[in-house]
Length: 340
Image 1 (cartoon, helix red, strand yellow):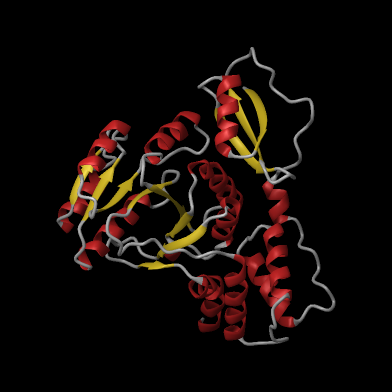
Image 2 (cartoon, rainbow, N blue to C red):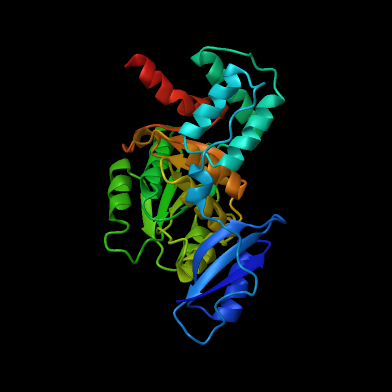
């Protein structure tokens, strides 16, 4: 397998360079932040007529070594509460560089020296409020059009059904569209949900079909588009997703499942950033206990948190994410231990 790394300012630029030099068959292997704030993206190609390595070796980006290396000992001047904050972030497998930045934020706040579990949660809320952005989706606004994007298995389809159910409960007009026309039974689950809800449902097999559907809709109707799961390391799938998401007035929203590996979450968030995504929606928090990955995803793509789901049921929770909700997730395991 032939590999080539490209330095670029954005994922879109890296993909363009790879396509020009390696052709359409190139696939993404990994992406990492460069020292100047850009990206270093590695592509692969099963051909033998291409120079496979740049002259300069790539920096060590082994995430396992970064994440699981022994943590630096806390400062002798650190308060018990600061050490507890650090311990909490480490429990969640938060990337070390993010722990460092969050502790720097904490040092700028007037936090107590000691404290109860409630004090810990309150302190985390203050830190999170400073370090992350929260921008819930405008589900009550007429005419919004969103496309849920992400790798397979992240919960996009059930999230689309949850959003449609909320629209029905709120007595608002909504239409659901799936672009998953290739995978066997890809749209059947969503079709079944929308049929029960009495919501209009269509499948767009191409970008032109989706454009025509959107053009013919009343401008006041809300539209939820469930995209096919996209392999973040497959150039063709990313290109096809980009063609759908680039249609006018569609906001792509990344869906990230809680509990995935933090390194994978960082990489996935970086790859999908070429779609000009502004928000990340967190799914399946009820099936996870470690949430460092969602902190990693938000920072890697510079995304605002929008909503969070905590049930696989269509009528289950879909609520706006905020600093209180996130700090509650981070301290949940400690409440479980106290209750046990």
